[in-house]
Length: 635
Image 1: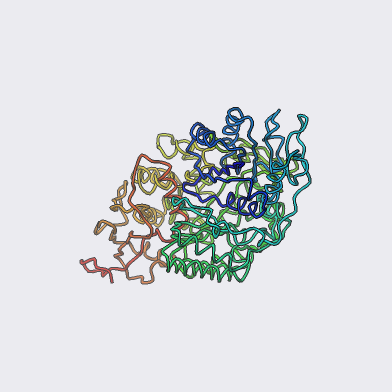
Image 2 (image 1 turned 30 degrees about the vertical axis):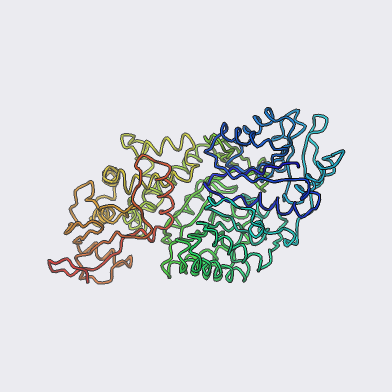
């Protein structure tokens, strides 16, 4: 028997290898393949490292090794491949996935006669590749959708046909190919394709804008298998969950399975772009089922020019506004996603977009760095857009950060990252949320002016650890890591809370608007009302209070007496409704909080706090009006 090792190296632990399951289940339909080949699926984590992975794979002594290649594992796969080819020179090696497809010249080592790259959807190419290798005189030139070296040069065959009838791909779940009981995270795919062609994304560019669906009964069987096999988390891989009316029924079925089997614990979705009512209904179903805690609103940019150049003008911006209004009306946490810097986006338009979003009262605004992904429209037009990249400091991945475009130079790029950190510190993490909102609303100082002043102050005040951390992150491109935003919140809201109270006080007191007594009162409200990300005792602020009097300090609550002008401001923000109120209890119990397990684990703390930032609405304290008598009891 010829042995095949299907290898997936993930950035998530205990990740179910769906791609390997598809390849095996599709190929084994062929009688020749079923008779001649044995398959072994391996799902490993990037932290396993080169040495351990090479040792394990070499010990398998497989005839064929097939790797799934992505932006997060590209460097590690290259290294493992280099060692394996040296140790097992008689084996065959196949690389597939969005990072390598159509890039055979870059990923097939010079002189390597036994390394090939799959271009496009994998099932047909993989099947034909195995068929060819099983023949007496194999010729990879007969395999569609393949790149390989012939006579020292890379040869690429014509593309394989796209699978339109997805029933041709048997379910690897139902076929029971995933026998490892340690899988905790699974991908669920109910269709393939995307009707949009967003410039930064591979989905639409790869599928010719057509969407093909797996049959309903098959998807439900997959969902039930996931639930019955104790899978904790499900990532729905569809590009637009909610695009089809059946997605509502499937969402309800996921919740039914959760109620019946106790799993999964949570679900992530990429919501449909132009179906706000259906998406809102789906979010409501998942929330009632306890399967999601918040909903992303993926704007990416507010600039008309940028949206035109990345081909998102056909996605109605009002759709996102309608969704945000609906979520807020039902008290459902949401966060807005932006990308910096997209083609067509200037520093001014980026800043203006963030200001507009702050003025809408967005719960949280998440700015992702622009990654140059292979096989995307932006990648194909990178010279036209003047795209310049730098490799992020990650030893296992191959992420390239866009640091310059025709509209943004490197200095402006860095300023945009600084601006995000100011937004994150003052607005998202609630460092000076009430102050900045008041200043903008009253026309005293707009959000951008406040954030830019904070940037200048942070650059100067390197005696504060937070300021040093931000400066270092901008200089080293560490902001690429998703956990970095969470680490800022971890410092501001927890580990260096009082030190950052002093930072915020020194910044605010240095500004001309500090003379406004309402600003000073709102600053003190920011100090006492800032949320806590962990289950922990509340603290007194790290600076003296003159306007707000702390009447009682409980373990998870604080009762404060407020001056009349601060009560009036809270009424305007719809947090209070009675001008006679003087005493208010702030309850910090919140939702989904945990105890900080390890102060010395920055990655875990950063990921945890980044996750909670995105559900800020659930973290904010509850305002309970108290009897103004000396009891302090909530009414």
